[in-house]
Image (cartoon, rainbow, N blue to C red; front, side, top):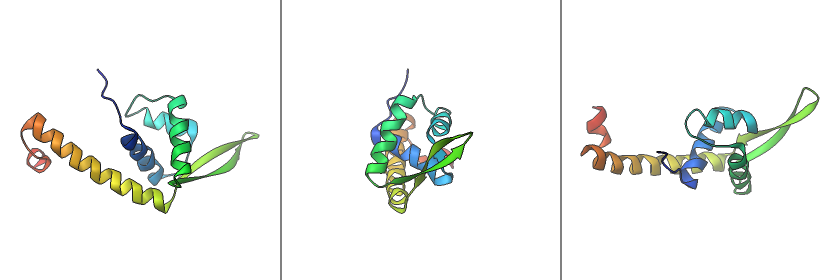
Length: 109
């Protein structure tokens, strides 16, 4: 069984990776696949949406005679990532309460 990922959570995951370093699309997809099942055909519309919302920018860098398009988080993207992280903590806490009958602090402490 796979748990469905919402668009907000997917945006947050992409921005979290980009907060660590700049990525080109294929490499970003590969790192995302370490955590969730996602295809390149799903990833590129997410990247376009994040760029349209000014949460990331792009730049090209030559690689073996071709240009690779790199994605870089913006300050607005970092602010959005902070909001998504807070939503995630609140959401996870609510689910932990249901699954375990406890809040996160009680589970890990």
